[in-house]
Length: 142
Image: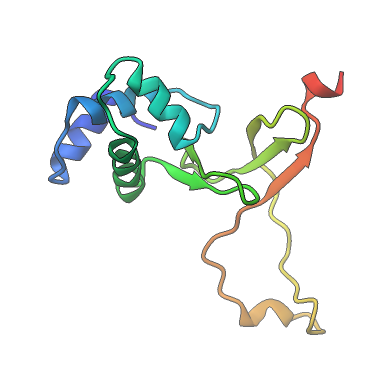
């Protein structure tokens, strides 16, 4: 993710207002690798701006998604997590502590379970894929 100053410039170039609340969301996400929920970002922003609303935080996050600076990650049926790493990557989820880690995995070959033959996957047009690995992180496994 870009720096808060770069995001400020990007928002202005896209005709989006840069308010103190949005700037605080930028700051809360900058170099954040924990994949926080909107509620966690809200808590961090509210520590500096007590009058901020959760709706304002969600709007800033949605605007960041729209300009391609954050991606929403849904793991199971839990609350969406927000990932400022928009490069192509997958995720490892620790079953014990719940921490989410960015990982890079080689891509599998897509083969249909209902069709047979070498060209079984030819009928699919894949736009994106999300792969989640689950297990124990190094700390929890120790």
